[in-house]
Image (cartoon, rainbow, N blue to C red; front, side, top):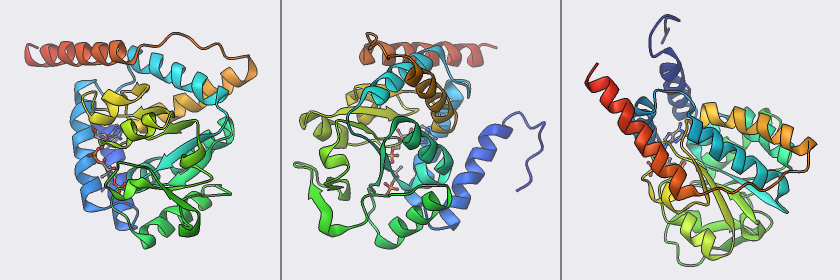
Length: 247
Ligand code: PTJ
């Protein structure tokens, strides 16, 4: 679809087109399109721009990532279709591994995602070899199957765009979890160590830049209260809602 530059929601429509392309190319499943719609609704409420509280969370995330021993970026179909280049750039910047981990399992889809990541410069992609898989205890979905060289042995895991119980299971294993989630009320958002309430397509770019800057200095772990930051995100949404409703 040709989206006129002057369209008031051009950016959001471009993001939607990316996801539809990802669906047609076999990276995203039908459920992923619905998940995107859920995200769009929340993006509308934050004014489709990166908020101050998102920036605070991004800074905390960059600090944790650059100081991590063995960080991993967990990739699902939606993330791979929205920002394949940024996944690879972030991995290179913070020396993280890239692991494909899907809720709706599928060998063919994993291969398609891996191909796209490689086309964007990824060298090694984990999560494809079942001989190297381990299971996260107390998790029912396909997400429980992880790579022993990746999520299984990671100290920090970035799990963007998912609403589920994997975050709590990972935290029980002593891992730090960072997420991008436009919905501050999702289970992942509520249970992560750091929740970035922003569209991943905007936030990943900032996270990469912030990590590059922090790498040059010795990063100091600043105090970060995820619950407080999530409450601020909800207050901001509420204020925006009032502004729209009473305009
Ligand atoms: O590829 P698979 O099989 O692993 O499946 C992927 C989905 C996304 C379907 C699955 O992992 C999932 O958990 O979907 P949910 O339950 O709808 O959760 C997705 C969360 O991401 C929701 O809280 C959305 O608000 C949020 N979200 C959607 N799009 C974006 C987003 N957050 C940030 N940026 C987005 N672009």
